[in-house]
Amino acid sequence: MTPTRGVAALLNIGHAIDHMFLLIFATAVTTIATDFGLTRWEDLMPFGAGAFLLFGLGSLPAGRLGDLWGRRAMMVMFFFGMGASALLVATTQGPWTMAAALTLMGAFSSIYHPVGIPMLVQGAPNPGRTIGFNGLVGNLGIAIAALVTGFLVKFVGWRLAFALPGLVSVAAGFAFMALAPRETEPPAKRTSKVVTLPRSVMLRIVAIMTATAITGSLLFNFTTNGNGQLLRERFTGIIEDPATLGLMLAAVYAVASLAQIVVGRLIDRYPLKRIYVGIVVLQAPLLLLAASAQGWTLFFLQIAIMVSIFGAIPFTDAMVVRYVDDRMRSRVSGIRIAVSFGVSSMAVWALGPIVKASGFQWLMLLMAGIAAVTLAFAMLLPDASQTSPGQAKPEAA
Image (cartoon, rainbow, N blue to C red):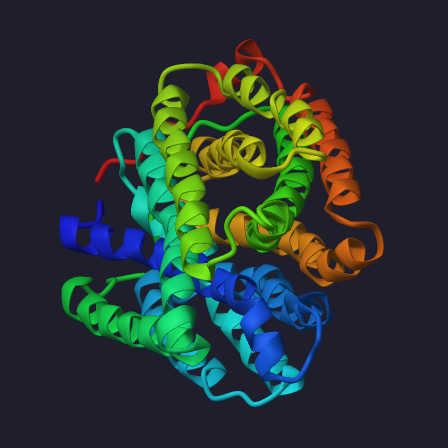
């Protein structure tokens, strides 16, 4: 059954909450480090790695429960869990209690992608457009994290930067309980009709989807967790007000998020491989240019880089929708996310030490190499002639 407009709106808001909450720490890390008595933000950054590790590993049981228990119940748990854990983060008094609270938040955040997106696209006549808009809202959550956190840190402190969004998530949980109808049976027990691909082609797609999800997640984590500090460093002597820098970073993410709307519409019309390769081919050259860029040149390159990174995000979800039966989409998504974000959580742990030891220039060169690997895997995707006979049609609502 296709979600009602109200439920769909809350599912999209959930995506914004998911990404926003995980990036509040990265945006406020300099202020938090000072409050905790640390001299450098790089020394505190590794304490946030647990959130991203659980964001990945927790997707495996979350996806399984979504299919076998029910997606509505899991989304209720998501909204209330995110709210409660954000309020807990706001009460922490040191690096280790912060790490524990953020890790708990990561566990609840792992629910959204394998559960919320399959629930949203169920029965969608244009899944690419639905995924594209959902991606836009999710990445606007990153922009909101940069904007709102910058202002809250400046005027009322970093603790309210967690507490206020936490209360919003709790309110969204009550609204979701009221609007989302109870499921008569879990997705795994429903009947649906899909056309299957040859086993060799399906295994190839799954392998490439997993590999590109890992490399794409590494780029996503390195950039979204490091862009704020990169902007601060490269604008030293030009702009140093945290609220203004937060507004600039929010603008980067807001503009880049629009790419997902365009990509979503293209996915419904053209072969996945052609569009995917066309986007990821831009990543490495842009990262190489940004490695030594300063000031406003860096700012505009950041926009272009995030357009290419955000624009690549919808493809793995589109492949799951196109080729995987709805009865097991949450489990397949959970496995893919567990592998990709479980590995890429190392980017959050390594970000501070890498920058501290070698600087942002070396980090950008490393990311350019990762982008080149993404392109190599994308080139291995089957052509449309190999997949068109088995493309699954959206289920009837």
